Amino acid sequence: MKYETQRVALPFFMVAMALFALQIVFGLLAATVYVWPEFMASFMPFNIMRVSHTNLLIVWLLIGFMGCTYYLMPEEAEREIHSPGLAYLQLAIFAFAGAAALVGYQFGIHEGREFLEQPFWIKVLITISFLLFLFNTSTTLAKGRRTAINMVLMLGLWLAAVFWLFAFYNPTNLAVDKLYWWWVVHLWVEGVWELIMAALLGYLVIKMTGVDREVIEKWLYVIVGLALFSGLLGTGHHYYWIGAPSYWQPIGSIFSTLEVAPFFTMVMFAFTMFWKGTRNHPNKAAMLWTLGCPTVAFFGAGVWGFMHTLHWVNYYSHGTQVTAAHGHLAFYGAYVMIILGVITFAMPSLRRSQPYNQVMNMWGFWIMTGAMCFMTFTLTFAGVVQTHLQRVLGMNYMEVQDQLGLFYGMRLGAGVAVAIGAGLLVYSFFGPRRVQAPAGGTQMIAGAESA
Image (cartoon, rainbow, N blue to C red; front, side, top):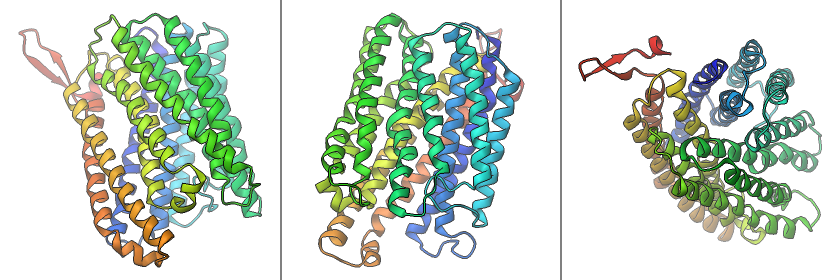
């Protein structure tokens, strides 16, 4: 590890993985309710399981982005992090805010806005933490080398903070609320987060391929341009049915269709760079995540998003299990996989060892990715059946749900497989590592001792 303050990333990764595991637990609980509707009904209603599942996703991804930034910024800026103490403080504030929100949800304490359910005081703490993070990283960047990687990364992070401010605006009119609500939710996940993803992907490609930085940076600028061009006006596909002017239907359809372009470009970028690369990097598991991320993101965010983004299709499919299929694979491919890829790349240096437990890590990759794809297929089929029976034939919602039991059972099985893959992955990160013994054998060293 070239810069000592890169170790700041380790506690961020540890907290992120703990919340990731908790998110999967709540996801399994919610999936179980679809199969057995009375499951835990008197102890924890389904809406509490769901809000816990979705909020944990957002919180751990943000903490993961922060950890990734703290790991790569010293190398890109060629200087140590401005203030490691400030980084630990903002992590503590963010983790406390997330934990307080999660506990509050169990007692019905929330604002009721999907993904933005956090009470006002928790939103304030999150904002303070994010501002401390931006000050720390921006100061590091300002005093160091500026590259396309760290400039695009910081642009995405600053824009994420700016659009987060709309979470504080909660109008009483539902149509106006949804108009601005998407300025956080959509402009994060289908806009500025794509900049963060592209920067992290570019960093991994530079480190593992040996391709000239200038070539990679040119690709990065194209990806960023396509992401912003399509993502900003692509917000219009959320305005179809909330009372917005009718011109949002063609705007939303056209620019949402173009949102496939940046993800396809990322696939071409990653595979082209690895094909041209001259470096035989020893961390094969990190290479797997780096190539898998844009591929799965292209299908989850690009193809599955395109499947129901046109307004004449969305009229029937809106709010069905088709949406759930798209959301699960898109989040997993675009953001979960890139963070797991950076952690896989970073952990050997953070734990001061060569790549370790790579086979277990790759087993985790294939089990999780395969299970998420299977889950997407089952939810897609469920959504198609639901759309036809409910939206075309006009059957009652609950009658339709009874027809989807087989798909929900398969989705629950896929969720269990995801949990198994995640367990293998987390163990590969933090479990005992293998080192070469003097006599040629191997020794096991406890993870806590080697960290």
